[in-house]
Length: 339
Ligand SMILES: [Zn+2]
Image (cartoon, rainbow, N blue to C red; front, side, top):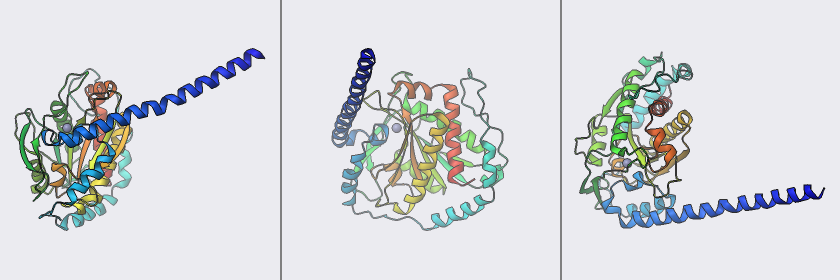
């Protein structure tokens, strides 16, 4: 009996000790984030799209947003035509919703050793339903960053570097720009296989394209969705997970695309997380990303995971992991377009 009491008491103490640990690690996490907020605010000019590339602390959304709202946007709103286009394609989507299930059981685990990224989903029967839908994919960054400045949005006097060099896999050794390109090209192939028309902002490392120029490529091609592929980094190796980033509903330049962009981000992160098992960090709304602010079409920066986290980094640079990533993103696109 005494032994039982001792064991019970010890279990209780162990429980208390464990539950004490959680707040402690959260404290570490938030001070880490606080440090990053400071870094982001101070090093803003040198680190283009740094909020996307690194951890995005929730509270920066508020501070950056208030800064941006002081701007006087000259080119505040976009054409209303987009929402009409969307609803037209949404209606067409209704016809083939029932076929969406055709994707469900498609994946299998063959080809583990193959280095190339390819999905093995059977050809979708509703390929024709995607005909005429234009998806623009922007593999984030490029071989060499460009620190020259450009306005953070049309007419803004707030400047940011044109394009930064991105983060790097701490465990894989792979650069973010190389990973983004690899996944971007694989996603293009998968979306084309599903019947979409795909526009790439880049297909090689050897380009010099600012973030606003990338958005203009999506605009000029009347893209129905603009997906910007990125991977994250943090000083804290335990931080992991995927997230989408879009504008706030108060964005001075493209608030009218907020609802569609948010829907796109939600569809991408939910399907991606389901397919990969990578933690779902949800969607963050920001108004200080040049490539979002210059976009006049539904846009999502998709952060696939943390290259500074061992599990995420190795998963993202493994061929079987990449198949799931591409499949999850393509399923997200299907869900966004409702078919
Ligand atoms: Zn990035």
